[in-house]
Length: 178
Ligand code: 5GP
Image (tube, rainbow, N blue to C red; front, side, top):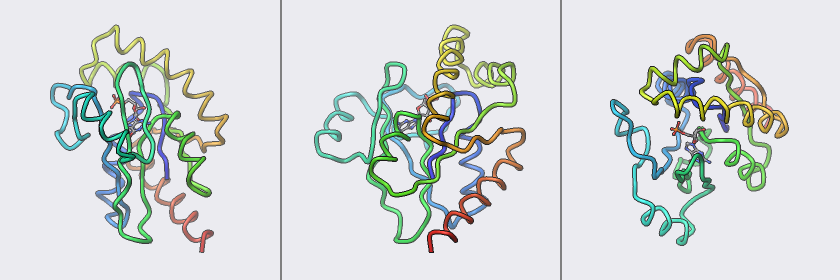
């Protein structure tokens, strides 16, 4: 399952809560060249320099990777046990690549209840106002790309409801794949 959506919709919080509540799911941990934000968990990403990231690209170590607002982000080839549903929290460029390599992935596009709500979340997590503005502008672009890819739109009203909705979607997809 690919969970995409613009910055500030709470994707990270939702997927972390999802795998905590349902440990039968496997959450991929991405690599990034973006510096760690103040207060951001060490576990959020594998934080690396550009050279190390580029070496891994050259070695074929990513399932997909993309550049987003000047930083590189990539999904390492997953090491999930056979049969365990894999959750990727990636941008729409990554989602597009996954469509090319995986049969019938479940694509979710998470949206904030409102732009005000999204702006508040971006600022609350420590993005300076000018960065928050760039990310909000990028959000509109991503939303239309997500719809084009055929992603299911889920509005993140509360983490609790969203976690339950995503788990229901995964369970249904797994049942129909059998
Ligand atoms: P942020 O800097 O806010 O943590 O992430 C910026 C964007 O990169 C978000 O849309 C996030 O979902 C996306 N992202 C995170 N990890 C990956 C990845 O491994 N691959 C791709 N393509 N995008 C990622």
